[in-house]
View 1 (spheres, rainbow, N blue to C red):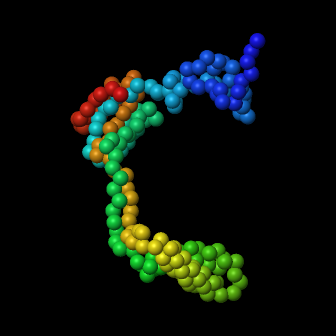
View 2: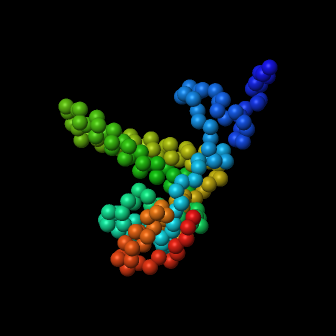
View 3: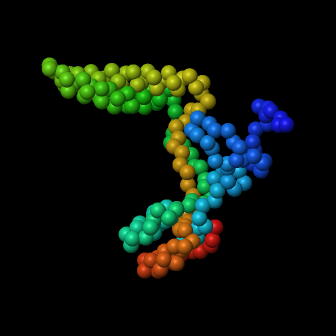
Length: 195
């Protein structure tokens, strides 16, 4: 005699009965492979070089591509990632309104150009009206939005993600070919380790 399943007895990795999974809206699912905690590991890779900045790593991959290397089996891996937020200046309600006016002016210019194309009369006036109306509404929205923050963020900034080192990795079976090509490029890789 079989016991009916309860809603709380869901299948988990490592439990028997993986072949008896019920079908879902997309069809019969496959039982997860590996340890059940995400996708299985891909092919083993080898680091053929580490570089201090992204343009150097990009030059290496570009050189490999120019020499008919299968670059779809390479990767640029940034290590020791750091989020850097550069403060650009103090933000006031007036400055927020001015920035909003600039953004609104661009949008108004775009709308004015669209309407100007289909205007039989003075199309320049339509474009200028769109520009002015967009700037006014942008200034109002920018100032109101900043005033609503209540002074919790009175600065303007730009964020960037930076890595201290960029490693170029290739599939292990292509590592020797990549190293030979890099030897012709006269670059000495700083590291070559398997991952």
